Image 1 (cartoon, helix red, strand yellow):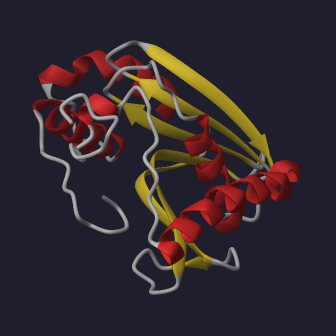
Image 2: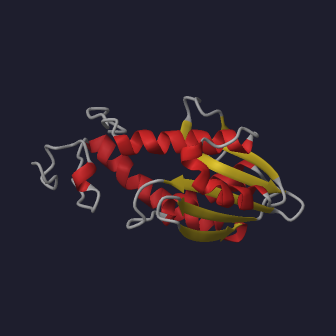
Length: 197
């Protein structure tokens, strides 16, 4: 889907709902009232917005292969990430990164939180600690995580190992299927692990 661009994710009611909630939360950070259907997230958003620091909604961050910040659309961008909510408190050298999730909390990906923390460290040198969370708003569940700058090198090493596998697949044009609990929602129905194969 993301590399060969052979498959497209169909827009579903769940995807549209998630997009609408993300937009409502983004607007709320800038002072726009929440639509009534999303009022249930107001207490959580208010608690986040009460934290000390500068608030940024839907902020895009990208790095080159040399881990240098670059423009989102730069041709040499190697890794990209979007923080649904980023709060920067340079006085305490602390940041908070929140990713809103409208789906199930059965398969949380903490690796996403590591990557967002690494992006914050690269873009904001004054930050030494990142508190992050996957906020499953419909399930009323939070997966919390914390990364300190001293962990940066080890985390990049793990991330580069992961991307090396992708780069090897790309250079050899070999894309081995990987089974997961998300297979029923994958658009690649020709895959042996898809229930409708």
